[in-house]
Image 1 (spheres, rainbow, N blue to C red):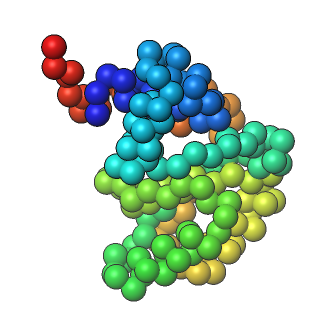
Image 2: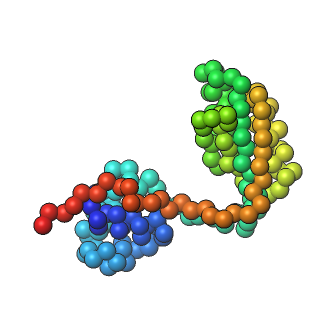
Length: 159
C-alpha cells in the first residue's frame, strides 16, 4: 500500500458511492490505474465491502443501549450458546469480549425501552448470566465508521 492507496481509502471511507473517475481525479491518477488499485485493495482485504449507512432514527431504531455482561461461566459450550444468541438477535449490532470486570459488551439499537426489554428477555432465555447491566445513550457525541489511516503500513514510492 502506498500514498495513492491511502488517499483512495480516505475518499472511499467518506463516500463509497463516488465514481472511479472522480476518485482518480482527486488522487491524481488516470481512471484505469485507479480502478486496478481499488480492486487490489478489495482483493487484499483492505476494503471488506461497500455499504449504505442508514439513519437510525428514520429506521425507528434511534435508542442505543450498551449492555455489560458478566458471564459467570466460561465454558466452550456456554460461549457457543452465547455467540449463537448474539448472532440471532438483529438488534445487537456489536458484541465484544473485554478485559476487566465486564466479560462482554453488547451494542444494541431499538426503538424504545419496551423493545429493549424484549431483546433482553430473548437474550436471557438463550443464555445464563451472572450479571447484566444496561446503559441507555442519552446523547451521541461521535459515531463514525471512518478509520484513522495514520497507522496503515505505507511503502514509499521509489524516487
